[in-house]
Length: 548
Image (cartoon, rainbow, N blue to C red; front, side, top):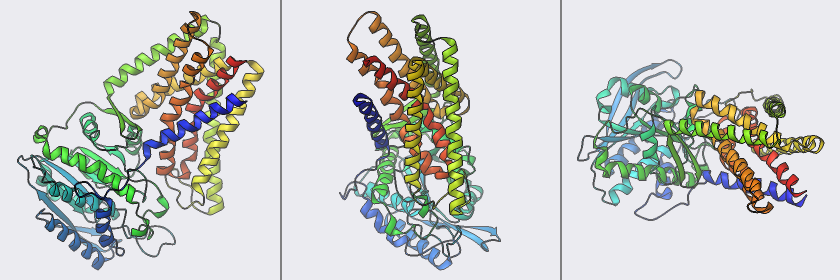
């Protein structure tokens, strides 16, 4: 019992370590670095009151403030006015603010944020958002980035363009019209960074890129504390959501889109105000943006406007703070083939040593598949019950303001893990097939590795890496035991890798799914939970059996 508790403690430790990938940096005040405290001064001036498309005077005040700040930074700003027709909000024009810092070349990085805040969109909200996070984070981090560049007297080999758009919250009017009416403005843009917020705190997640993004991601890797997961990009590209980044992509530009995701309850509400700003989140925006902008403007390599064009995609994920893994789609395909081969070899060794059979392997794979479906249904049921109790409409992608939602998410996840762990222990106690259960769990991961390689390649690593590690562990321990190398403690240490790695990879993804999609996606989150459990729980049982 004591050793079992220690192994579940290892699961907890791996979870905490995995979630470290989402930590935000400390706030800095030094003169020569990005400072969230200085950036916050801009937010306080921007978010004095709601400045939605309906609040004309307040919106004009924000525009004038930003214009003045851009003048002080030497951006030589000008306003472009575009005619629009929107009957719902009764507007006839939008006004974008553009600024430019020239470099030695005709290649530019474009920084984009919108300056209108959200009108009242939720039931029960009488006024719109103050826009402190959405998009005060974007506006202030861009201004502070340029300010720090200038205070450091950075020599500009390449230039910077800034676009503060109007009318984003009601239909991307500013960005769409700028692309349509003023396309020549974008012709010399090599890279874009669009800065958004879908919440008010947490890490600044890079959640979307252009297609064929290998060079884009290698550039993003130069940021401090990059936090991104290629699965998020694949999922977001299949959702109906859009930002100012959308018309830029349609025009053919390349770059990144980033936002905080935590606390959707404050998103697009009056609670998106300066009192609820997270300085560590704002600091994280700067830790990503400033190094990228500085790298671009000081490196002659980016003189070529087409530098970031590529013909291959990247798989990428944040493993630990400032540990950002990137490899190409071709490399991933090679690893998938190697992983499949090693897993096949581990099955061969298992069959040869009579610890598994094809029949038991098929049955145990079916058991994990059944549990996966049950977890999905359990999550859907709980989300619908919460919807019924609270009166908040059920939605797979957006169910805000559910009381104690995070606590419910954690409790359900832990309880389901405990129940499945108990179920697996009973199976092992009755039939002694912990080996078949492990191979069946690995087989489930192998099946989804193939599915994701074809359909959502950005998420392939979630199944491939645990499967690769699991196969290697099985093969290594097989030969160590066969040749009587080492002792039981060594075997158990090696086997414990199968507990740590799956949790390390899945923990941040499960939490981000909850943050981005809210409790409505509990079923989807629990479905993903089965993949690490299918490796971890049988491994714990194998370790327990090895001690008896």
